[in-house]
Image (cartoon, rainbow, N blue to C red; front, side):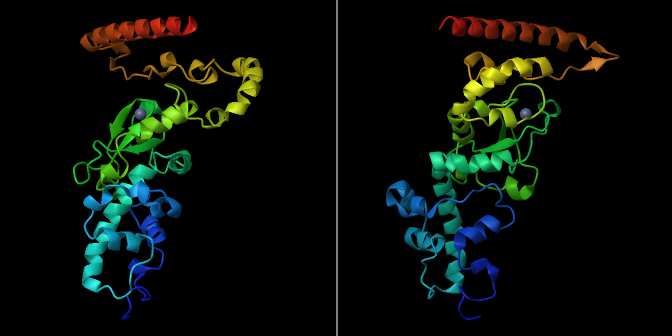
Length: 271
Ligand SMILES: [Zn+2]
């Protein structure tokens, strides 16, 4: 038990990143590839954000000297988490990082939208600021385009800067076919096709249209008009009749929305 790194204490197991990822509450994080961490260029500026930077880096890359005192090890672990989190925020907006987070999104590792009309749409983590120690992580729903607090307090206390403000939006920019439809059930299958399958999808469209109402948002690929908010809306009703004031407002909002969307559609047809 004298040597912390070989002791039975699982907190200090040999591979720091594996231990970190498997710890309860860290389910939102993906694995940052070692190559990325070892390329100092990727870590530019982080030395000013993290105390005991080089030792923290040694700890997460399993190169830490065994001589390190146990009481310092605790402090170092806090800094190592901060460093890993800040590296993570940079990593998940790279092509390889996006792909890793995409796998987690497909498994709904970040939970599902609590809004009933979003039909259990999987969520994506997002920060409200890129500065650490300011705001905890929130979850973004691509369907209602709103954000939510994580259900569990373990996830609710994760620093939002470890995911950053751009991640979910960049994911949908890089994978526009993943932008969820604004209504209907969650279905990854039609959205997961690569670009090479576009022809096949076109050939299949006639068949698909026979089976289901056309979900114009997905079959035609990405356009500004389809990205416009067409989310299902909740309508308060009393005995089936819409509540007067709200109904009036909603009818007006929807008329404005639909006018904008048809203008966008016209613009895009003319391109
Ligand atoms: Zn939602």
